Length: 211
Image 1 (spheres, rainbow, N blue to C red):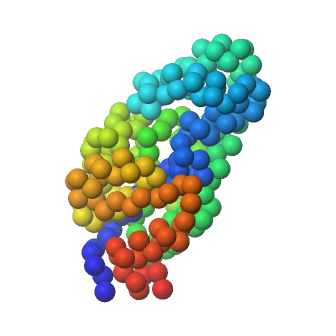
Image 2: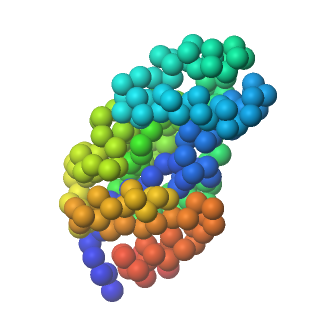
Image 3: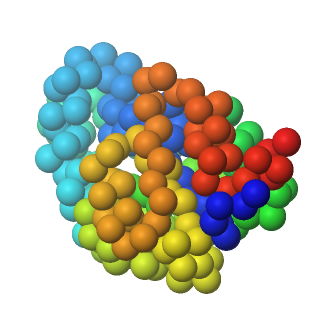
């Protein structure tokens, strides 16, 4: 028996569709290996630009020279795309998304992320073949602590909040969508129990859709 009419299911990107909790972690793990500079030092330098990039005020290209200076001049141009490509994708969660798409659900990504990184990865991993919309904080100037990014995502898929589910690996990012009427599912990125997510979706939608 269907418990609610769900039309749209939204996924966070890093920590849900990828195996690292944040995109900053992924980028800095790679840059640490590429430059032989300790991860914590790389992360401290990178984080000084993070807020501006997440809100679209700066891109990686804008900060790359200054970041390179902070990293002892060891940063090279090719490291940027290589850091994007190093993103460890969560193949089990992507398989779940494909299953949902085959069942007829509209799918979206809502992510606090950098514009250039997401543009690169959506092409590199053919994300548009799975997801009907990808809403990025740096493109819309709003993060998941405000409802604007969710309103935009709902509008893209013509879905009402009560017809929608959002999956995120940060409980704090589920506060706003729940307040506006979306169902929220927390994903523990360390356990990465995709079957648990599948079970929660079943309880919110219907047993029949998942067999």
